[in-house]
Length: 329
Image (cartoon, rainbow, N blue to C red; front, top):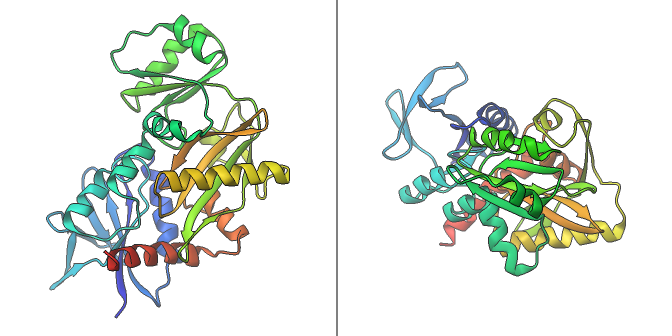
């Protein structure tokens, strides 16, 4: 009997359209011979399974099941393809853990930690993981522009602390633009992270647990046509994503070593992707994503293909990892 896999997609954040694309790619590439696949849309106004005929069946939130005709379907595993809230920040994962439902994500704590950029960097501080100088603000805090710029310098980045896909981010060159950028970030989150600009090669590194071993995927160099790797660059073709990256063997070894250390330090077990920038030859961590983009344009699937791992193998491995961990508990 095949395992029933609910592929959840959508979410409540600005990233929901990207998540729908990621979820569709997962559904297309999971093996129909091994799994019964159920696309499940988690949206603000409804949670539904949509079948091949586009019929909608409501999800019973009391146990995350669905009634199809006379049958009550319960899922063996949930494949999480939701970027942002509530899929990537641990909220939905906590719900699955309360119900005892197997899922492909990290624990609710790890999801919440990695989604919170400033908390994640704080946890990694004792482990000598290089990162940019930064300044934190909560909504309502007094904005002392002069003090902030003294710490992070110019230019600098103003980011929504808990958001992805470059939503709520601005690169500023003048102190006079700081307040406007902070208010823009507050549209996405009530916490703001302001970071120094690191002038160097930007690198993206995927790390996964594959066939029981931690595997660092081929490194991607990011060359944005825009001022930085913003939404347009990520999803609308305004960048070059070069795999393998045009870096030296020493640089490659250094970033892979740090990427693996971060993955192990945070106790991760699934699919992840992190961004780094080289400053003075040293890779500095920007952020880590535990539900990275899985669309055709996304970086991690390209890295997997470069490593000889098909999307069917990548996604199937995530499902099998989840089932194995559950069976060993």
